[in-house]
Image 1 (cartoon, rainbow, N blue to C red):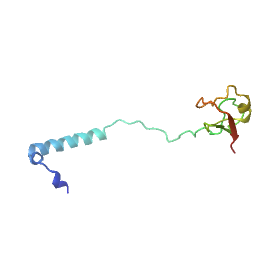
Image 2 (tube, one colour; image 1 turned 90 degrees about the vertical axis):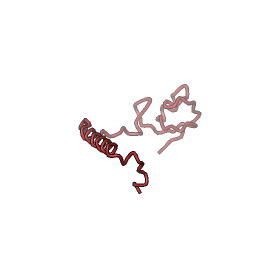
Image 3 (spheres, rainbow, N blue to C red; image 1 turned 30 degrees about the horizontal axis):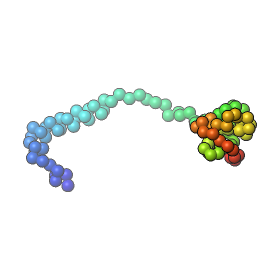
Image 4 (spheres, rainbow, N blue to C red; image 1 turned 45 degrees about the vertical axis):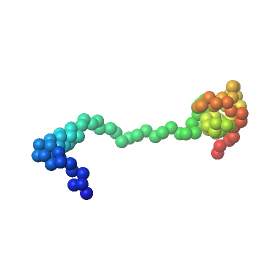
Length: 98
């Protein structure tokens, strides 16, 4: 019950008036907050299979051990040193992800 939490000072008419005035002031402030209208046309996120390194082929291989799917088959073979382009971890092999 809300009345259980009323303390003696809150029963004072001056305090009650001050609380009400403060509440009305906050209500007016909330109504007068400036805003900017934004368009709901959100661009689609890029294709998660798009290239990272060579820009010729989609990402098709996950690197081991980091697991990032970040390279095409050609880049897996040609990349030297064998480091993941996302986390810079060394990788020792890659598996084709369908």
